Each structure stands twice: as C-alpha cells, then as structure tokens.
Image (cartoon, rainbow, N blue to C red; front, side):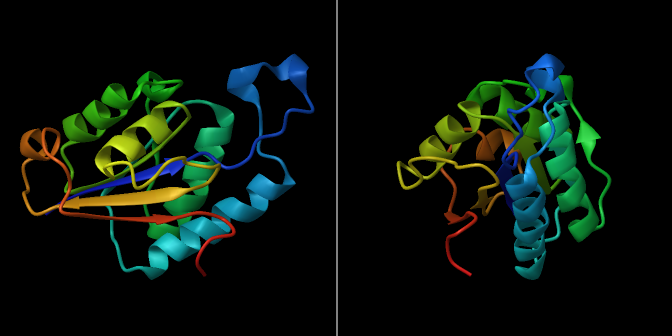
Length: 159
C-alpha cells in the first residue's frame, strides 16, 4: 500500500508585507485550522512515516501541527516552495516511505489533487487534506497510475 497525503498550508497572514512571501506566518484562522485538521487526520488512524514540508514559514508551521498530531518530525524540503504538481509527487516518491504527507502551496497542490482525483477535487483551500491510496507498494507504479481510492477534508467540511 502506498499513501500520499496532500496538505495545503493553513491560512497565512498578509498583514506584514515587509516579511516577504517566504516568511509570512499563519494568521489566527490558520493557527486554529491547522491543529484541528491535524487532529482530524490523526483520528482516521492513518500513520504516515514521513512529513515533507516546504521551507516557507506558513508551511513549516502547518507541518509542525501535523507532526505533533502524528508523532513525526517534519522534514523541510526547499524544492517544495511554490512547486508544481509533478515536483510535489516526485518528492514524495523519492522519499520512498509507505505513507508520506506533503505540506506545500497552490497552485501545485490543487493541480495534483485534481489530477489524482480525476477532477473530483476542484480546489484545495487552505489547510485542506487530500489522501490518495494505491494498492501497490511501489512509488514508481503509484506515480504513473491513478489511486485506488481517495478522500478529501477541509476546514468547514465534514466533521
């Protein structure tokens, strides 16, 4: 079994433009949503073995909440900052873990989620979580075919 979890970073604070894009922190909503969505993912029973994160502050902070809920230390990956869909999937495949969480940015997250869900996920809002599962344990195979099943959750949806 191969599992890919896509997490778009939580809502960031645009009120400090002097910081620049890479250093924008989460805003109050993001600080509320990230631990909630992390808790909801942990409650599914999924136990990923790696969390990869963009190096942007908003992504690293979001990944930290998911790491705390899942008992993992996030691994910063500079390649994930503003990465296109192919790079996001490639980073997970190269990590080679059976279940990988990737915390990054749009538009790459939405493009990848939409492609893997066959159009079922039209947009990844901030702090959305999409889980894709393949019956194979080979990332090369998983990277080249659609998943066997997928699920989607976002703040304000579901629970």
